[in-house]
Length: 362
Ligand code: ADP
Ligand code: MG
Image 1 (cartoon, rainbow, N blue to C red):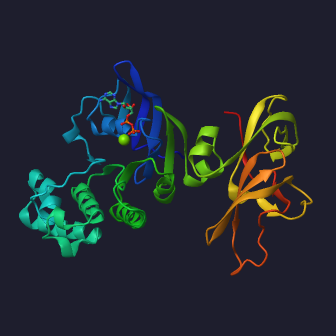
Image 2 (image 1 turned 120 degrees about the horizontal axis):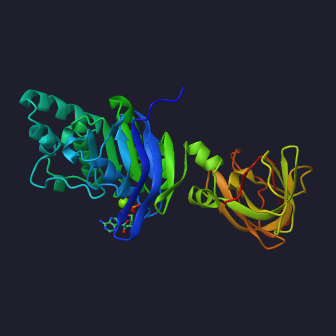
Image 3 (image 1 turned 45 degrees about the horizontal axis):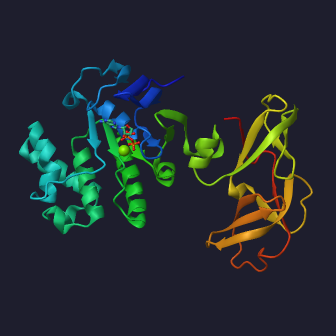
């Protein structure tokens, strides 16, 4: 049975003057979900969060929270807390006073505030920094104070707008796991905005991939990565090869493509594509096998290594096919030392299985 959505964006359109920032967008988020809005700058992510928090009203459509329409409900009456892109701590207040601020405003009893603040600082591992002022903290620590402050009031729903944007890579990765722990421990619903696909993949139960005011695809990280529904999503998430081709025929769950890249391709797909239609096969670099001899089965083409980047865990290749197309391939380095790696200046083959990629007609 379908779970009842906790948040429902129902046919939301938002205009600023004659500019359409969000167009007829529908989206459900479930309770206790870690949900990401992922897309390039300007696609409307912040606008969606601001409408949910009540800082903007939709031009048309309705947003529901727990089945109740939110139209006309002022921000402070919504059980929503939003941590902004440019979070601001009060500079003259200590860490604990910053975290306590919202609780004081709510009129919580002094002893309860003390306990809650201690709990929050423990959660973000800042117990030892309670008495410090923001300027005595690193960027990452300040970010964690802002997080602690956002969750202190135990909002059922926390909206986070690019919360880790100010952190360097290592700290960002650590904080990603802390955020996931926090969400699990408190049983909250998180909607997080990011333009960083690795971040969305790491943390989310589901991701909505956005493109200029619309949702292109909603799915688990594995779904949007392994079964993208469009060239846009395939290209936005991770690294991908697109083989553009013409459908030459379909039979028994196999689609044959006549490729402009000098070789024909068979794809396992039981949809019925019209012969002659233009489609693309999206295939990830790790689904491409490299070999020195033509493989006995699968789709194959020959070429030579154009770029080789040894990354430790994997080696990334760009192979130039004889027909000129550049193909990305990524091989996992299982053995401790690679004795006879494929190098430059030798003829090699790329190959991939019929079920290695996704066929896209959008
Ligand atoms: P994102 O968060 O995905 O980067 P935003 O939601 O901030 O994108 O903005 C989406 C689009 O709407 C952008 O083109 C932005 O310039 C425009 N926009 C946002 N807020 C306003 C506003 N108050 N007035 C006019 N245009 C706006
Ligand atoms: Mg934004």
